Picture (cartoon, rainbow, N blue to C red):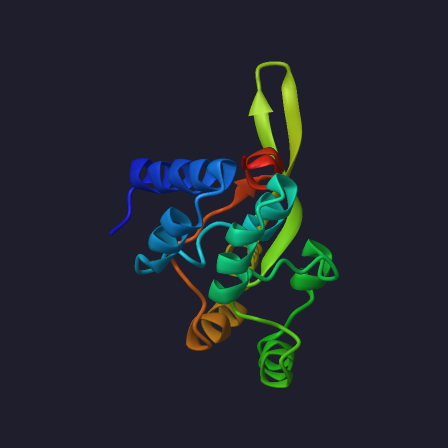
Length: 156
């Protein structure tokens, strides 16, 4: 079971290995069970750092699927049937990430923050439990969480 501090520590190790261009450490980190699919935007981190060796490791491990064409509004219209059809046709991955806006309350009012959320989180937040069940049956991960764009995109 992963707790938040472990999640953050692995995130820090990933960032550090990319910052230093250490493909060996990156490969070791991504070889840990469950780590490879937990951190969105890894590929852009490596490209930003111009680290060809790290980019090669990430390509070998497979990039995460961020679906810029699928909005939160589109996700709200998914039905279990349409989700099954999209999954079967390969147009949707149960572990896709969706760009969205998170709302948080601050003392002066509501603040919007761009974030990337796992598709499963988006459907659950929208009370689409039948769609969530389809995604879970298709292998959606439970050990991922949303990332604020600053954390996910800047990463390094």
